Amino acid sequence: MPVFMIVWLTPVFLAAGAGGAGLLRRAWLDRRQDRPALLLGGWGLILIAALAGALVQGPVKGLALAVLMLSLGALLVVLAGAVRRSPRTTRERSLAPEPLEGPSRAWRGWLKALLAGPLGMTAAMAVAFCYSAWAPGDPRTRIVLGGLMMPILWGLAMTWTLADQKLLRATAVLAGTTIAGFGLAAVRGLL
Image (cartoon, rainbow, N blue to C red; front, top):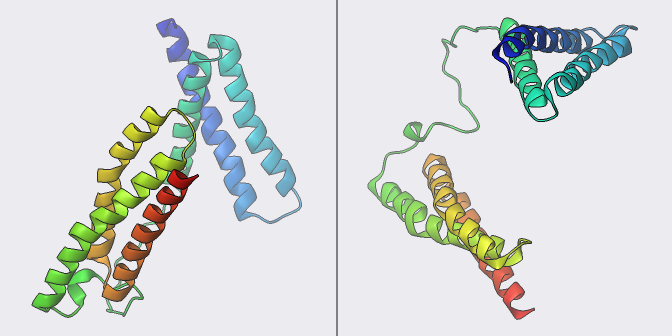
């Protein structure tokens, strides 16, 4: 793709993304009679810009540049409408308190570590086994993807378990995930 085309198309697509997102935002904020026209205009502008990119520079490069710049233009509209609020001065109870606000007892820490470590690992392993057993595709690919999923799922299970104040809920979810995952993998093995 020639550099002069990128330099010329980038601001056009950026403006089209900002214009389309601006029309969609106005349609969302204003519930008047011209709302369908604003919706049609916003989506139409975005679609025409994406198709123009595909026609001018080809279906791969032009569409990729158009989608990237349209997204950045829409992000500029979102950033322009962002509202910065001052922090609350009064302290109020939340449905999900921060982990440090709960009672501080040594046995809770040890129990959370046991839940996050071994039980979180078995839950992650169960989900990875279930994926490897039931996902479509080549078995070797499923096994590799299941192996790559396991540490990510373990990290998510650990994060959630350590952040949750309810120990029984964390235990029930991790144990249920472990039983369901290994059970479904075993069912697939019996079929």
